[in-house]
Structures are given as C-alpha cells and as structure tokens.
Image 1 (cartoon, rainbow, N blue to C red):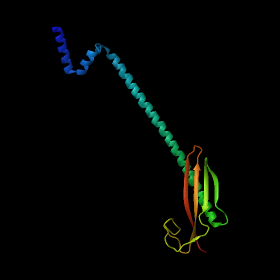
Image 2 (tube, rainbow, N blue to C red):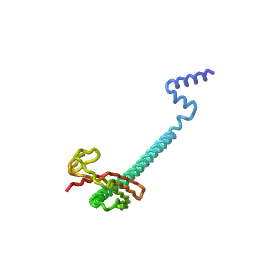
Image 3 (cartoon, rainbow, N blue to C red):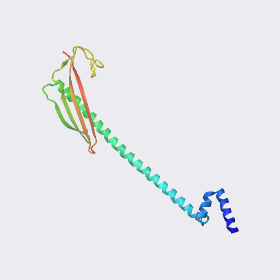
Image 4 (cartoon, rainbow, N blue to C red):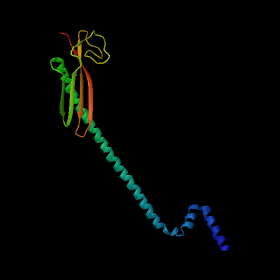
Length: 182
C-alpha cells in the first residue's frame, strides 16, 4: 500500500513538471523506448506535406498556362477583328464615293481567324452642316466640328472574328465621312 502511494506521488510530480509526457507514459508504457519510430513518422509526414505542396505548385502553374493561352488566343482574335475593321473602314470610304453600290457583307480570313464584315450606309442622303459643333463624333477640322461648307454620311461597320478554338471578338463602329463641297 505504501509502495502504491509512493508510485502515485511520483506520477503526480511528473505530471506537475511535464503533463504530456506523464500522460503518454501512463497510457503507453513503452513510450520512451520507441523514439526511432517517431523519427520515421515525422520524416514520412514531412515528405507527404512536401509532395502535396509540390503537386499544388504544379497544378497552379499548369492552370496559369491555360489561362495565359486563352488570353493570347482572345487577343489574337481581337487583333484580327481590328484588321478587318480597317478593311471595313476602307470599304465604307469606297461606298461613300460610289453611291450606286449597296451595303456589303462578306467573310474575310485573317490568318487562321474567320471574320464576318458588315458595312451599312445609315443614310443615303448627305447631311449638311451649319458649322456648329457636333457632340457624337470627331470631324476633320477638330474634335466635334466640321467646316461650314461640308456635309457627311455615316456608316455602321460591324466585325466579328472567330478562331478555330471558338474564341470570338466583336467590334462595332459608326464611322462618319465628311464630304467637302466643291
């Protein structure tokens, strides 16, 4: 009985100094003799954490590459739409000089992109100006103004560029061409 009390007293003293170690030795009697196994578990746990971080890093890099590739394809589609828009502006200028030609719609291949181009004359009659400033567009003589002897026609130009991967870009513009009186 006295021996049991001494044993309990030593357990309580151990508990007071290091409660976790005392708990482990009371639950697992061979805790002190298995330190080599703990080192192996710590090494395995560390390796698993490193593998998870590495796999996450590879996933994020490949995901970023896919996003960048999609953005590059869209920007290329946008650039092909801009190139087609320039063709559309030239076509609108040609329509402005030849009123007998009707509106045009066609499909243009710009590199590997297919661009639908539509040019529409919004009014066949030229609008004569009084020389006052206009609020919706820029003119030849400066922002918002035209010569007092001039007139203009407007053209609606629409371009839709489609790539092989399904990426699309669409541009619309209302182009104004000033006609100088002769």
